[in-house]
Length: 392
Image 1: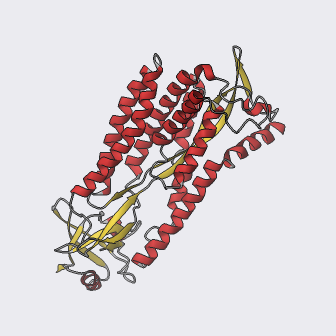
Image 2 (image 1 turned 135 degrees about the horizontal axis):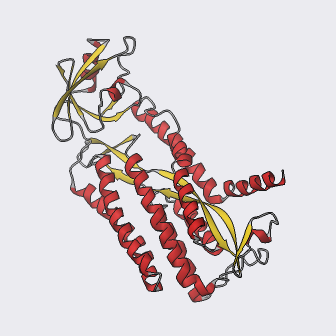
Image 3 (image 1 turned 90 degrees about the horizontal axis):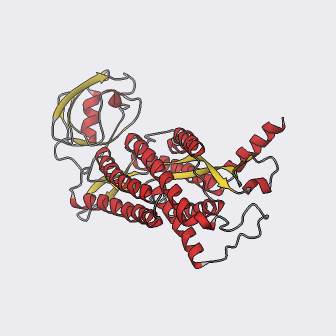
């Protein structure tokens, strides 16, 4: 019974951490903001469920399990000092949205701040905590070496797994937003902003929570004591896409980030022998991350708008799930040239053509590459307008 109570209390400590709570609130707010925008702009919620909240909770569970097992088996300790600084950095960066909340930015920043505080010998304001729970930089003899190496390897793991998730999921369920060009033309754009947390089991040198709670698990290895701490690591990204297909834009970003991760891995290995390689790895993550995002912005600025009004047909800017349009494999960026053998110029033309046959729909579609294809499907007789496409 006492073991169950202790487990529940330890779990509660995880869920009341500010980073997890702030991330949860932002995920909920993002869902409602997106649904409100869809109803205002498109007269219907394209995706009715709060999928941002669902993604926030579910995306990182497998990564957290694998990462926690690796950290525990290999034995990769992180100081409580670093965890506190990380949570502060993450909350500050969350104020600006999802763009820099990835471990690509938060982990190096937290580590460099730790190194800066130690180098400048700044007194931390957290000495009021119980003795034994938080002794500022008590592992000073390895802060400059082991901490940097450990953070780099954990960062490489988290960023690598996040790139897999981003490439697979980031271009799904995107809501079109609208803006006007300098010439007054209406175009659509998309904000790719996946966001989730990873529950990562950290090994903390010293008694840590054992000094506050007798039941907190503490184990000894040689003369050093260690305890466990479950940390919510926030992972996110935010880019704007209006001149590329979202899937292509994300693929290019993942390619650039993968090159950055590969170079960082080499420096992480080098940091085992020299701390300078580790510091170079931290700086590479920060500067390289900014460079990758800047390259994406340059690609967007140098290309022509993809999601503007079509000269021949009507442009598809969203496809609602579980609809005939999804069954016909209509994709974002496609142009519907004709419907039921009637050429299209406006959205009204499209729905008038649909009404000619209330039980079947035949479309001629032009992809972003200019290739034409034919597709058809049955419709609901009482709801011909529920084909499921959102048009510009």
